[in-house]
Image (tube, rainbow, N blue to C red):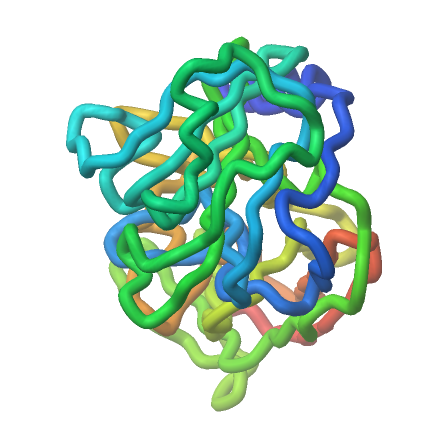
Length: 287
């Protein structure tokens, strides 16, 4: 466990400092089809997915790495669900990925160029990937030095409003899989628990904090995702795979706690990308 925590701290401390422009114009931060770290099918999504079709531009000066115009299952991080996509490499060991592009909209000269300038047109978003009912850009950032996916919103200007974060149907699940709904009971046996809330369809927090009697037990961050045993994982006190973090379509992990006998005050704090916090407190009797 100490090794995992040290790796998490090292990753967060060494996040790149480069700042990007938005890859499409007139972008409001409350107009995403899906936030980074959201559940997508059978995995945690490493993409920021936009709602509206748009011209797609390079977010920073970069070198053209790959122009992918056919589905290719051998691309690893950049799998076939991205459809037609362009991958650029930048300073600070960063790659940006522009997926779900219309093939015919990709300028021919990009096939012979080695570099692009910031805000240079890369094409138009289209239904070339998994989004058959959407025509939106799927945008990814990958840190090749730390071998992690990076939340693009860390590197993008803050614009618009944030979607509201909800903390509903709080459920505790013990090691045996028994569920305790806090809307129905506040008397809980002592022991270790995972804490889940209702999953929202689009928004996820930027961070969640779980505290017992004012002492923080765990902070889960959506700044980066790492691959552990070939699975994308979210960072907390451990690396959480999809199976733990999103065990069902309607559940999202907030953290893990140990309750000891007596009266315990459980606090859940949700933090958005702007640093705005919401805290929910539950007084529990532990027997």
